[in-house]
Image (cartoon, rainbow, N blue to C red; front, side):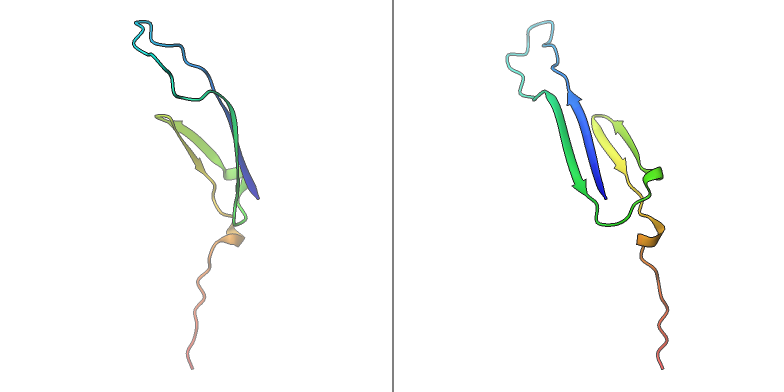
Length: 74
């Protein structure tokens, strides 16, 4: 029950007009691993990159969801 994200940041070419003196962004490969606290539905995991932000949707499995149980007071 772990999620691993791997990627690569490529070195960007400096601006053609020479306005960049120094680049502070790192480049190269990276990997992050996260432990998930509950069972998940592997077939429903999805990811989307929008405006430089990675969104990962990992739905819980039905057996891991909380259930409501009615308690009768007597």
